[in-house]
Image (cartoon, rainbow, N blue to C red; front, side):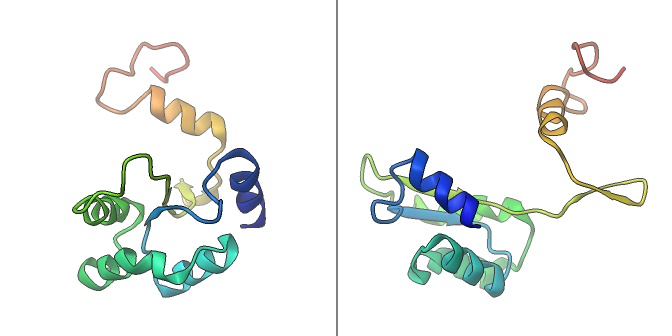
Length: 125
């Protein structure tokens, strides 16, 4: 988390002093606590994530869409800067753990299954 915090502080205006709003994957109380502590975001910013966790449970990284919906029920002020955080498990392939690398993520974006990726340069047949 320290590397992410440093990058956000150096490359974005989000931490002056903190994001105006937060759309965070629920992950569970421990995940939210560690993100709060690691990034220095006040625990109160996780209120909507906590509500989502209570209502829907830990439904994987896509739960951020539920938190986003709650956030924009009463939208932040124009020009507000927010942070979206989602987490997911490591990829599994053939029963062996594999970390997804940048190329794998790019390939997945360029070659989505059932969406015409076939035949594009770099996409599997």
